[in-house]
Length: 398
Image 1 (cartoon, rainbow, N blue to C red):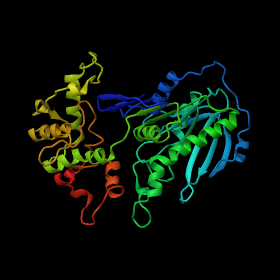
Image 2: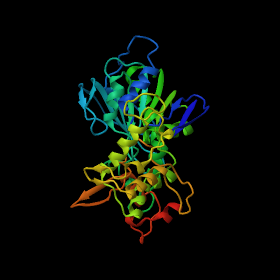
Image 3: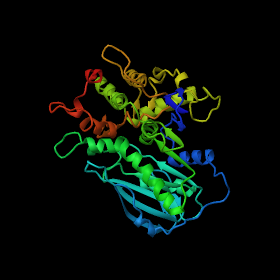
Image 4: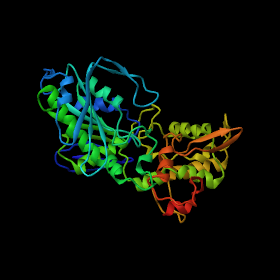
């Protein structure tokens, strides 16, 4: 069964072999996802498995279209967190393997990193997803390995760029680089599964009993791509907050900035915080009956932003125009004739990502979400006469 969630609306459809949970919250951290998988997939036996080969010997492993570049035992310690603001992740002693896969007929180089616990393997393999334009980070392997998994990520065939940069989608002539786009979209994901499981089998002398995918946002999209294209790769897939429907949600990420531009009213961050705090206070107990700072049923929240007009904040008094802007942002993108295009933010969510602004010298201006901004100049069609700052309501209609 594969579960799909669109905001709070959940539907289910049956798919053989694969079990995928698409969760609403994009804030679910990889460590939390790993805990979910660990709880749902305990080893069938209490016996933990030891390596059958030395780590260094894996450089001699022969796989189709693949070069094992390095294999080395690495002492335990900590690695930087996969996301800023999280604590460093503890990792046990591991065998770390890096391999490169080349696609026949394509001049690509897809990097695969596999980390395996030197002791305490639970007999399972976990493929780990990425975020933004990154298909995966080596440091995100620390959590799964600490939980007893062998785990792998892929660089998707492009390296050196941040998760906010999709420039790899263009070749040196400024045209769409379809081989790398296909690597990013699906091809590297299958290579990750094939190489990761083969390296695991060579090291431990046996195939993994079960294999799982674990990813959020881009990682969630990757999980759904695996389910659609390569259903035999994994026994189960955790696809949290999958970043799908790019043609809809990427343009929609500009909506808050466009609303503020059209209104001539870029709200300072502390005003947005005031609206968020008031909405949570008004609707906190909805859905779950618990007052915990989280709205249990955001879609049931009917908070009226106009109720804050006249309220004082550290960055000024909230005006009727401010309230109208926030209401329009939450309502979501509409055409010039008012027809629905996509969903807005839900009450209780932070405005800081998609409705971000900066204030310098008393002037507040928009600061668009970088992933959407980069998409406009690379993945989407562009015109030399259109600058990124000149989008209007009619651009949302196309």
